[in-house]
Image 1 (cartoon, rainbow over the protein chains, first blue to last red):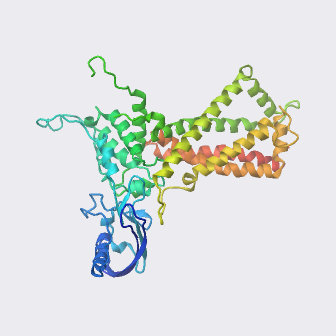
Image 2: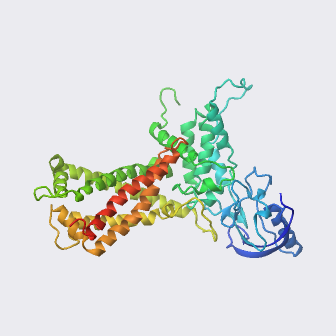
Image 3: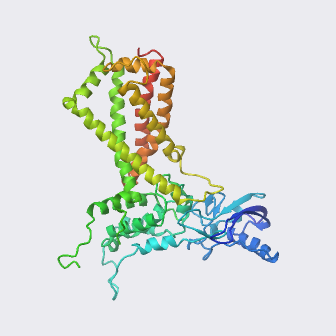
Length: 263
Length: 224
């Protein structure tokens, strides 16, 4: 690792008072920031300066600051979470920039992710998609024996890869159509690949896709941007799996009827 | 939960309509190009192979074959456009405020310009039908004399230029479309994912290369 240096940066940040107000870009100087700082620490320093001046600090979402919570939603120089692959904004470091750089910072832009304040967007649409079917129904009681259910190693690996999704919304943010299909397909795949996910597999894909559409996300036109912006490397293969499952779900769907004790 | 939208109202349902009609249309343009290669066959006893082929298509199944084909293609094209229209409106609405700064990495000119190239292809199809099916685009059209109509048509430089330009747009549409329809139908696996772009490139080069060769062959006097 290279020795610590300091950089002078200029930030062009989206400022918006609240959901109802019109926003705009403001320019801030960030002089003498350490290359060892994370991007969010750099924003903390800028905010301390703003607070000292009696100005309103830049509001941004952050939580774990170790790249696993998916909260730090910001588009940095036109890329969600900044220019580095498989990196969230909190894990992006100032050393990724050059002295004298001007950095633009914008919130996620999607109808389904309304801006609440500055860089903070409301991502509860994702929660509602999960609530529509992104779960399994498990009986209560004592846990069954480990390895009672045989699972092929390949499926376990693919399910784990899909489960790496942290729901940050970078896929929606980068997609020219603001489509959430990478997120939804990861949440469908992590269950569709495992035996525990089978009973509700086809109801799940119908319900989650219906909720995704109801939240007014766009649709996939196979640009492939999402895959490159995803901090967890979720693959487009998941979208293909979701499409397959949706097609099958549509072919085998039976409307509910109250006969034969089916209630 | 079951929403009222159903298959055709859903995003993925419309995408699947796009893909399935896309397969039909890709199949058609491939066969169409191969059939037209008969432009290069020598005349047999004063009758051009292309004219015989045209006659064969018009009289297939006692003349009903061509109408079955036309009805199928028209339905496929209408459904393709209907799905594209619906998805485009949905996608436009999904991002009401644009980014000031957006850097693309994976998307291509072809993928971002699908709607534009699609409209160009639609205009091309209308002009093409007026030119060689209806026959009222240029003077001197003779019903049934396919070879004559093609050659005299392409001898007009602006007609050839229009065809070639339209084919360039069509190439981008085909290339992204072929890959895209495989992905939409769920055909994705590491074992053959590399072949998907290869197939798209190969089919695009074959179809567009063949199609562009016709006006060039006429303009250069290779076919006269």
